[in-house]
Each structure stands twice: as structure tokens, then as C-alpha cells.
Image 1 (cartoon, rainbow over the protein chains, first blue to last red):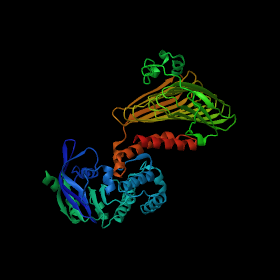
Image 2 (cartoon, rainbow over the protein chains, first blue to last red):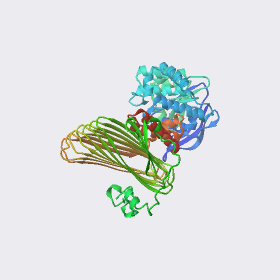
Image 3 (cartoon, rainbow over the protein chains, first blue to last red):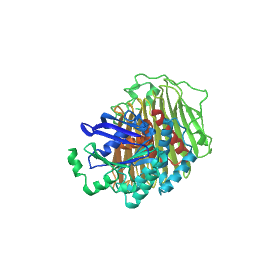
Image 4 (cartoon, rainbow over the protein chains, first blue to last red):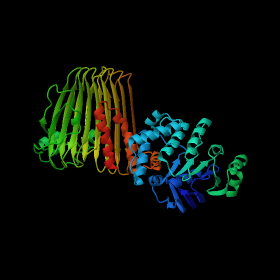
Amino acid sequence: MLSIQNLHARVEDKPILKGVTLEVPAGEVHAIMGPNGAGKSTLSYVLTGRGGYEVTDGSASLNGEDLLDLEPAERAAKGVFLSFQYPLEIPGVPALTFIRTALNAQRRARGEDEIAAPAFLKLAKEKAASLKIDFEMLKRGLNVGFSGGEKKRMEIFQMAMLSPKFLILDETDSGLDIDALKIVSEGVNALRAPDRGMLVITHYQRLLDYIKPDRVHVLAAGRIVASGGPELALQLEAEGYDKYVGAAA
Amino acid sequence: MTLATALKTGDLTQLPSRRDEDWRWTDLRGLIRQVPPASPAFDGEVEAGPFDALADDSILFVNGRQRHAATQGAGETIALRFVSTGEGGGHAASYAIVVEPDTTLVLLESHEGKAGGYLSDVTLDIAVGEGARVERIVLVEDDAEAVNVVTAEVDLAPGATFNQTVLTSGARRQRIETRVNHPGAHAQVRLDGAYLLDGQRHADQTTIVTHGGVDGVTSQLTKGMATDQARGVFQGRIVVAPGADQTDARMGHHALILSDKAEIDAKPELLIFADDVSCAHGNTIGALDEDALFYAEQRGIPELEAKAMLTQAFVGEVIERIEHEGAREIAAAWVAARLGRIG
């Protein structure tokens, strides 16, 4: 599924990723944990093609297709979805309009027919109900005036609507209270599927109580410095990142 | 010093130039080097105007000559059309509208360029009677090589309402000027505008509102976008004359620049000679939010489409303020189509 080989990337002149190698097979959920400044968000932006991040070496591919030469929207059409740590507010564009525009753009890029309005609305109503999102909120400007928890739920809603192949969750637990965390996690778990992979980026172990990973990796100073099963997350929670920070430096 | 005078007399020194403070960003004298021939009369078929389906009756000018007049008492929604078909020719038109007290008029005005490189001047006088209500929507679609100056002088009686929205895609050089004589006296004015400019197009929206009496309200919102080498100009002047106390005037102009070579010039002016007034203005010029753009692209919306979507949302605030539902829909569709073409 997702294959990252020896990935190096820098922001301006500062190297951030210094040789990340990672394989996430279809059907698996992998967690990336690490201290602040380790390069966690950079990894998510490099994979999705944000401007300002320069790849200097290595590769990243999804199901054998190179991602790094594609425009951000082309990567999205291939099935890469990033749940943002800080979702943007887009005044004047209702959430439903935004998502329908995105869904149809992706379908066009894949040579599929656009979705008809009734089918889209039916799908939106189902998914909104399952995430306990008031349908009226979807008619307002995307994320405008929403609380942190509501914005994260909207990310999961978009994910459910767009049905991507590979999900990257960047600090999805930040700013969530325990009830919102449960709703968001249930939404993510509902998307677990044999043909779908996930990369869950988090600083804290808490999220992994709800979204159970198959593998846990520690990212420190731009490299994966340790990998293990779910028990590694618990160990990090108990011991902290100190020994990895030291080891990497 | 007007384009109309220069066209009539053939005296190019009558053209406004950059030496006139109010015309320094819309220099006509430097642009027009010879007097154009008068546009010929045109009696051929003219295709339907953008607002025809909404209007009870229409008034049609072609190349400065009136071809059709509205029937008295035809209704309160009137299309006023100025069509230019004279390639490279010059023409001028003037028209006066009197709105009787306590009546309503929806004026759906269109300037339709059907030829290249014409010079057009339109002067309107609009008198709005006591308690009357006017909504003027102006849709200007000029040829890229045209020069067009549209000037409206609006006189309001006490208790009158005048709401205006100008939508323009610019021209080689273009000025849409509105002067409002505001009596105060619970009269209300809304003066809005939107411009979407590409190529080497230029659009100047100039407004002058003079509050002459107590208790008047003016609200202005203009939003625009310039890309390529286009140039947008906004000049908004609100004068509060001595004694025009309790005036409430607000002016906003906000613009997006989407290329390095595009230019926006803005001059908001509040000239206040009265006490106890509430006046404010805001003016911002900037680029599209890169973070919002990446967010939309990450969801699968290609860059050009994402830019158009965000620009449409930005300008949408002006469109939402149009009261006439049919006109609002046409305005929204015009914005979407225009951005689709620019994209």
C-alpha cells in the first residue's frame, strides 16, 4: 500500500526528514509517535504535496504509483486523504458545496461520472447522522465558527464522504474532549477496511486507546528510530521520548 | 472635461487626464490619441440582454441612439440596455429617470460590448422621489479593447432608498462613477460593487456620496480581484456637509491580487464637516489564503478550480446583498462564469 523509502525533505534550508523508511500494508493502521519537532507534520505535508517542502532524496508511493511528482489534487484523487491538525475555515463555501466539488473533481480525475445531487445528499445525511453532525451545519460556511471538536468531526465526515484509500490523521486528538474523541475514533474505526491503510500521527498515546494500531513507529529527529507493536505506545507513555531524542542526536 | 465632450467636439484636450486628481488612475488623455469616427447607426438584430427575462419592459440604446422606450406604467422592473456594436467608433448617450414618490423601481442596467475597441460614454440622471425605493444593478461586459465611461448622478428626496450593485469585468479603460446627493432625512443608500479582472483589463469604480442633511445612512461594500496585468481602481468619497449630524456611513473595499503584475489602487476618503456622526472605512488588499488553497487541493480540487472557488466565495458577500432574487441569481452566475473563464 504506502511505501516510503529513505525519504529526505527540507523546509527552506533546514533538513527535517533525514531518511524515513516505512511500509504500511493495506488493511493496517500504523501509528507514528514522536516528540515535538521530530518531523511528524512535515511527513504528512510531504506525502500530500504542500508547497514549501522540498524532497531531496527518497521516494513515496501508493500501491506502486509514485506520489511525489503529483500535484496535491492528483494525490487526493489517487486516494490520499490528510485530516488536518488545524482544519481551515472557508467562509462563503458551504460544507456540502465544498465536499461535493471535491468529490466530483476526484471522480473526474479518475474518469468516473460525477455524483448526482440526490445520491450525494442521501449519502451526506447518512454519514452526518453517524457522526452526530447536525445537517444544518453542513449548509453553513465550511468550519466557520465551529469549535475544535466540530472541526475534527467535519474532517472525519469529509473522509467518510470521499472514501479515500489511504488516511493520514495528523494529531486528530488535539483539542478534543473525551466525548468528541470517542465519536471521532468511532468514525475512523468505521473506515477500517482490508483495502485501506492508515497512518495515525500523534504525540500522545491516548488516541491509540480508541484507534488501535497494528504497528507503532517512533519518529525522532527526522528518522524512524524504533518500531514495535501496540505495547510500544504504552512504553512511550510511561518512559517518555528522552532516550530516543538522545539516540537520534 | 468628459469623454462625451471630447467625442462631440473632437477636442482631445477635453479628456480627463492623470493631472486631474480624480482621474489619475484612469488616464484617458494618455490613451486616446485620435478622435474616433462616430459610431454608425445600427438597425440590425440585437440579441436578448442579460436581464430581459426578469424585466417588465426594456429601454434599449445602441451605439448611443435610443431604439426602444419603456411604456409608461409598464411595471416596476425595467431593463436599461446600452449596446455597443460600432467597431472602433465613438458614441455617447444620456438618459434621465424620475422615480415618483412612494413607488418602487428595479433598474437592471447592462452595458454590452458586441464589437471591439469602441469608445462609449453614458450619462444618467436618476431622481428618486420622497419615500421611493430604487435598486439599480449594473452589469458591465465590455470588450477588452473598449473605453467606457458610465456616470450616474443620483438625487434622493427625504425617506428615499437607493441600493446599487455594479458588476464589471473591466475594459481597456473603464470608469463607473456614481454621485449621490444624499439629503439625510432617513434616506438610505447602499453602494456596492464587484470587479473581476484579467488580461490587461482596467476597471475604476468611483463613488461620491454627499450627505447634506441630518439622519442619513450610507453603506458601501466593494470587492474585487485582479490577475494577469489587470488593474482595479476603487475611489470612494463620502462627504458629510456641515449640519449633516447623525450621519451613519460605512465603506469597505477589499481586493485580491492573484498575480505579480496585477495592480489595485484604492482611495477611500471620508470628509466630515459635521458633529456626532458615525463613519468608518476599511480597505484591504491581499492574496488568496495559501493554507485554505492547499486545504481545498488536498481534498482533490485542482489548483485553478480551488482559486476560482475561493474567489467566488470572497466576492459572494457582495452578491448576497442584492435584494432582487432574480438579479442576485444572474449576478452569482455571472461571477461563476467569469471566474471559470479566467481559470
